[in-house]
Structures are given as structure tokens and as C-alpha cells.
Length: 254
Image 1: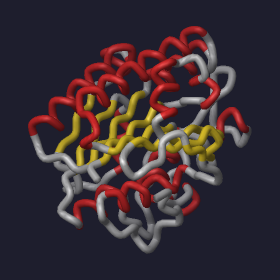
Image 2: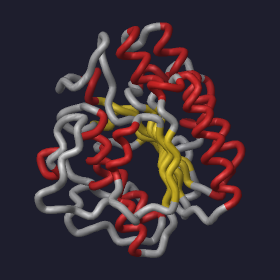
Image 3: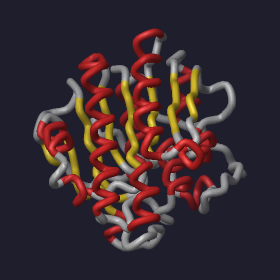
Image 4: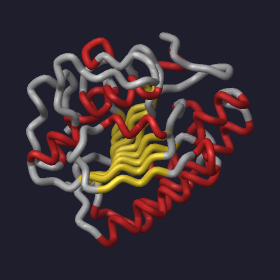
């Protein structure tokens, strides 16, 4: 089934308790508030792991600077392209461009959060995704929302400003799901959490993330355990009828 993968950068599970739109979606989803990310719990290594279903120690990117793989592993977009699926990526943190290799996606939209303001780019990206999905063939879309991570670094994780950014991000998610409806499966997750004004440590505040799976293939209100960030690519591949790459180390959650 066509799938939209939504990542809220730096989203801690305990930040969702008082977000009404998040709680409504969770009740209609299979979910865990206790999934684990990879080490180091830093955005680019985590996101490369999400797309390639291996740890940073295997793909080689261990900082927010992309490192070409010595022994390349096909990522999610490359696997889906091999099945003639159309992929698109929407992002507001420029380094995310490295999650896929050239010629594997049909479309990308980038708004520079550092220049425009992360408080605006999430809504712009949500609108772009909605418009693209309504006008073009789209099997898989990834949208990366970085406002929460920016707020965490500037004001602190779980601060009022961080929570406001979290609400804004979930407002954008609700808009996407309302506009595009049940034609898509929605997977909502994070790359890492955070504490104080930082992240990257092997501690629960940084390592524990939510994974929320909403669509006809997933039971409503079902809580699951033993989930890792590297399980997401095999799950998306399975939803779209593709075989996970033999190098991938995660497992499908279906």
C-alpha cells in the first residue's frame, strides 16, 4: 500500500502526552513509545540507518557529514525504484539529501529551515507533499520536519518552546492525513530524542523514540515491543510489495 513516512526530528515519546492530535492518531494505530534508535543518536547517521536498515557502524556515516559507503547497501528508495515505485522526499534540513542515491527518486522539495525559519518550513513542506500527492503518481513519500530539533537545541528538550514546536509539527501531520486520507499508510517516527540542549548520547532520553503505524495493515490501539529504527525500511518495502534487500538487518513490522 502507498506509504508516507513522517519523521519529526528530535521527538521524544514523553512529549506526546499532551498533544491531542498525536493521541488521536495513536489510538487509531499500531504503535510503540519504546522503540530504539541507533548509536550515535545523531540526525544524519540515524536517518541513513532508517533508509538502509543497518547501523552507522555498517553504513559508515557517524556524524552529520555524509560518508560514502565503502561497500554500498541499496537504500529504501533504490529498492523501491527497482520495483518501479515512485518516491519523493520533502525536507528542511539540507543534509537529508544524502538518504537516497541519484536517480532513485522522482521528486524532492527542500526549504532551508536555517534561512526561512523552521517554524514556517514544516507547513510549506506539508502543503508541497499534499499538492504533489494529488497531482502525480506517488507510491512512497518521506517528509522530514526539523522544527522540534531546532527548538530543542536552542531552548532545551521539553521546554515550552520545544513543546510548541511539537504541537506545530503534529498540526502539519494532521493536515497531511486529513487531506490525503486512507489512500496511504502513515508511519510516524523520530530519528532520536534529546536532553538539556543536546543529544547523541547512549541514554534513554536520546535513544528512545516513538514508532506509529496507521493504516489498513495495522491494528488500531495495538502496542508492540522490540522495535528499532532499522525496522522501518523493511516495513515500508513490505507495504509496497518489494523484497527487503538481503543486506538489511531490520525486520518488517507487518
